[in-house]
Length: 173
Image (tube, rainbow, N blue to C red; front, side):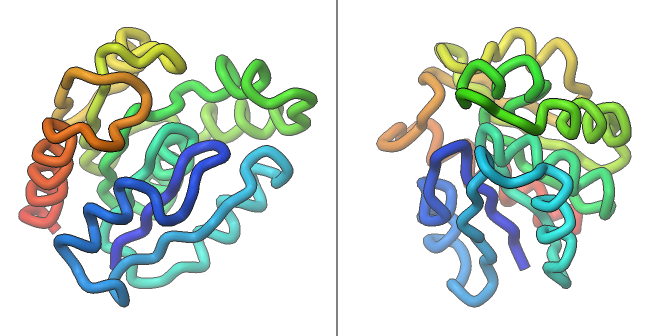
């Protein structure tokens, strides 16, 4: 099973989900719709841990943060796309009145390590999250730096790299 986590204000049927559907059957992909702005990060993680038989996780932006935490909690490899690491740096300015910054800090403190393979795709023109900062603080198995901003919808280079990343994860699981 593959767990796909969309970004802040995103859709469970995001670009990553559509690319996964080109590679796998729908019944092997779990892609929940999550209201990150109004739900406690600890509750989100607790809900995500209930999915069983997950082989790897794909996470985009803020979903990349949750994919990373869950990967470390459950020993599951992940593919992060423009991950929101560290979220306490970004989310309070992106979500007015965000009430869960302390929980983000807690999760980062507890789970910011890399026991599992972590693959990452960074859009080097991302104007929402700093790709240079993310690359500097993350210790990953492999990183792809590609042209593009925060969203990769319609980006053919991303499609190719995404499929390459998934293939690498599958080889090792």
